[in-house]
Length: 207
Image (cartoon, rainbow, N blue to C red; front, side, top):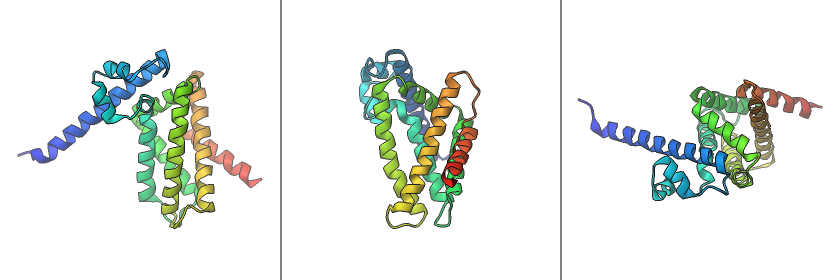
């Protein structure tokens, strides 16, 4: 006999994720059509088939609703760093961890396509660009702490900051280049672009 005690939470989680994805899709569609300034929470909720009250159970702001894939990437990376890297890890080990998470998101298709839409939208939408910059700052602070923990540092020291900033610069450059290529109709490979970005950083810092 199936244990309903284990089935019900799984079903609830699937429904929760489905509702979250519907809200994210609705926000991205409306931002693409009307811009973030021309879109309200009520508009997004109606397009997603939920109430505004339900919307706020998932996202604190309308802009945040479009950034779910970015948060999902950060959560997945945090999990991988905790499991795969330690105080003996090199910069290349961290790069491989990021590449692995990007590859997982590419395999899922939906998450990486939402990231692509966001990167493209922020080029034209100041409101969404500001929200993404705030999220990047928030994630950077958390990333500093994760790198420190992974490398066994008691504090966010200079080495931790250099590793974090280097990784962040390579990732941001790769995402922007990938988005620009996809906008131009290229079948660009995000993971390969990220690896090329890491190689370019190593070449520059070696000179």
